[in-house]
Length: 171
Image 1 (cartoon, rainbow, N blue to C red):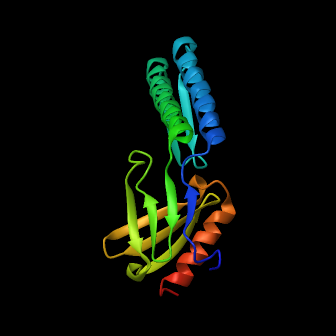
Image 2 (tube, one colour):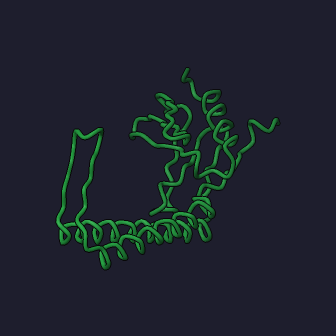
């Protein structure tokens, strides 16, 4: 039996370094905006898209904007912390067998997975957003995505896509 027909398993979880950077950068942004809210006694002028949109805020309104940005940044840092926890503890695996693919449902449900028989795959679409590829698998029960940033190596995404293309009857 060749390697392309045997069951294959791929770890499917966030990358630790990316989550650590997320925690640090958003934590610093939260601190920066909180510091701006505390210490700034000036207003805020936002000019967007070549002076098409301009906003002016008084010092108190600017402080509110800075607090909102601080809270949003802190929330993103907490999401990064959750992602780091998942990267360290999750045992989620994307599994390809000779007849089906099993994909973890998501970061919030790592123990659940969606199993799609190759015979039920209606179409495969690859989308790219900011150098991250998504494989959208359309099947009778809906749509499921494989995100290349959750795989340890980018080449694994290509392997999965090629195997799905070969095994399903989709062009």
